[in-house]
Amino acid sequence: SSELTQDPAVSVALGQTVRITCQGDSLRSYYASWYQQKPGQAPVLVIYGRDNRPSGIPDRFSGSSSGNTASLTITGVQAEDEADYYCNSRDSSGNLVVFGGGTKLTVL
Amino acid sequence: EVQLLESGGGLAQPGGSLRLSCVASGFTFSTYAMSWVRQAPGKGLEWVSGISGISDSGGSTYYADFVKGRFAISRDNSKNTLYLQIFSLRAEDTAVYYCAKDLGSGGSSFDNWGQGTLVTVSS
Image (cartoon, rainbow over all chains, first blue to last red; front, top):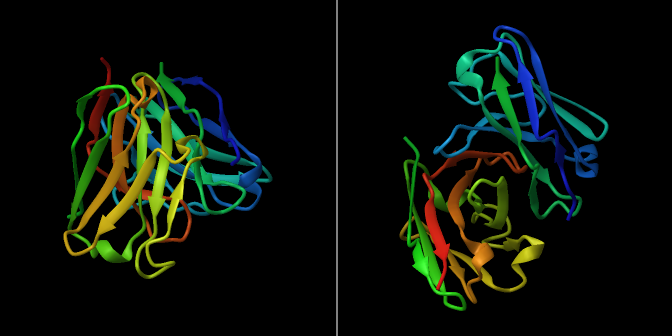
């Protein structure tokens, strides 16, 4: 299986824009999905595919990808966006799933 | 509304076994791939195992490398239920176990999650 690497922590000022990245060889072949998890809650899918948002996810969340790096961008960060964010994708074999280690987003 | 309700967690002895269940509702369970994802206390998400829906590969199963034969995933489409059997429990299996529904896009996007069931392995 392959690995996905995320920065452990990122901080951003309220109302600013933040980019959270995810790196891994499998991202050259497969899109990443992104999940938001708040303390004591189950993860919530926020981005999947090229740049798709499930129903109910605000349009300030967007995704992009280049080479072996996928990115989640939050434009105009709100206080309620403070959470852990995880990426995942298929591994290089295409049969298994891997998660990144997660990024803790702090809103200042 | 999609709902996933896990059960079967609790305190278990090292070396013992446990069967987790996830009852699904609000969608055609049989046609979607499903997965188990776990999260150890204070740690990140870790994919454990997945099983395909009847529309693709007819119930094929997949396991993370660390499983090493100790876990078995299965589904009963007549009962809309996903299972995870864990054998030879170890302290490092202590985690919240989530069941997750695949979006159906052929990737690895989980669009619905249960609230999780806590497994604690301790003597």
